[in-house]
Length: 345
Image 1 (tube, rainbow, N blue to C red):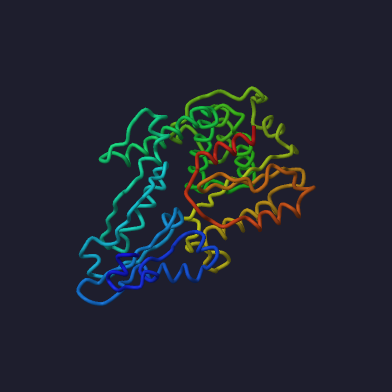
Image 2 (cartoon, rainbow, N blue to C red):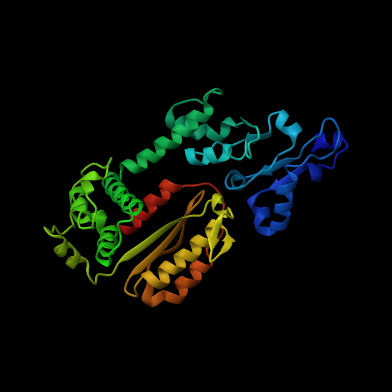
């Protein structure tokens, strides 16, 4: 701001706020600031540009349009990043804010070592300027792997059911009601099954040969509480009429603000469409004797409501789904998965 004043520019105009708090309290001002940040402040040979100050909200799903030829000639939009996220996906999103619309882009990282003192002590490694970004991301990966390693069985079962589901939908194999029922029941109960049992049940879907579906999942055996069955009919019979626990883990990071989704022919944000889908699942696919829980993740994992029986709390659950707070922050995906699995144990 002092530099702006020294150049006889209005500092309130030059430095623009693009934080989450502004988006929530004054969305129109946020939109104006987002537009202005890509425009030069004054005409002339120097063509000074504005500076935007943002938080994690500005690092995902925000389209900064800087199309000025002079700006592009000098490298394009410059990101000055003061905090490196612990998740590679978030880092990629940060860098994706510049170099857009076929224009040039550039970035620089300026860190406060004190912010990472605890990490340096924990990992026994001192950050070096030339490798700081890679080191911080590696720390984040190591933390995620450590959490996931404690869920090895759940991980491999989940990996296998995901591989099968992707194959089924890619090849449009669900053509009959009985095939859909097999897949639904398999998705509801795979967490108690061995990989071979998952394959055995999946083979009952018309046109699906699980041996042809490539896998990286390892055999981990069935859970101790699994009642072994030699035939699909025995497995299906054991599932029939049992109350289900339906737990949804929903992305509420800033990228969900993007207005690139469609709902009933109208352009909406990804989050709006997601919320409508959750309500549809609750109203039409969860029975009264079933329990449903809802958790969201952004910079932190948050509980909207725990596993709750639908029949006794229908109205309350509907209100909580409608009242879900909007998107913000980063993407704490693995922590959210861990939270969901722990709730279902």
